[in-house]
Image (tube, rainbow, N blue to C red; front, side, top):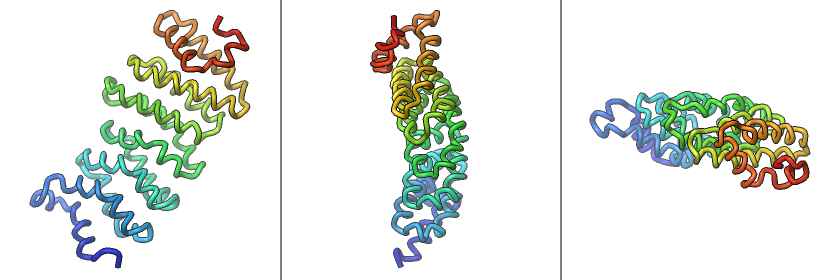
Length: 250
C-alpha cells in the first residue's frame, strides 16, 4: 500500500538488459542511483522486494553501476539496520573491496560510516583488509591513498589501542613514506591521532614504542625527506608533550 505495485514493477524492470537496448543504455545506473531512496520509501520491512534487484545491480558488468552502489551502501545500511546489513550488505561490501579502484573508492570514501554500523566482532574482521587499500591498480592514483589516511583518522575511534598498534600503525607508517607530499602530510596527522589514541587510553608504553619507531625510521633517516617528515610530524603536534619531557628532539 506504500506505492502502486505497477510503479514498483516498472522500477524493478530497470535491470532487464532488454530495457538498456530499447530505453536507455544507462538505465541500470539510474536504477542503482535511486535504490536508497526507494528502499527508504518502502521501509526495511519491505526490503525483500528490492533484495534481488540490488544483488543484480551489484554484479552488473558495468563498473559505473557497481560504483554507484558502492558510494551509497553506507546510506542503505542506515536504512536497513544492523541485522539486514550483516546478512545482505556485508557480502556485497566485501565484493566491492576487491573490485576495480573506480568501485573501491566508493566504499573507501564512506568506510568509517559503514564500519561504525557493524557489530564490534564483525567490524574487527576488516582490520587486516584495511592495508589492502594501500595497493591500487594505478600507483599514480595518490588521491586513493589520501582518502585512506583521512578515513583512518576517523576509524581510530572504532578500535581499541591494541588493534590500532597491531594493524593501523603499519599503514600509517607506510603512508608517511608515500611519494606524494599531499599523502604524506595527511598521514602525519594520522600519526598524531594514533599517539593521542594511545595516551588517551593510558597506553603510554605503546605510545613510547611508536615514538621510538618514528625516531628510528624518520629522525635518523639517511634521506632528507625522511628527516623532513619527522620535522613535520613534530609541527603537527605529535611531540607537543612527549618530546619536551623526554628530550627526544635534541
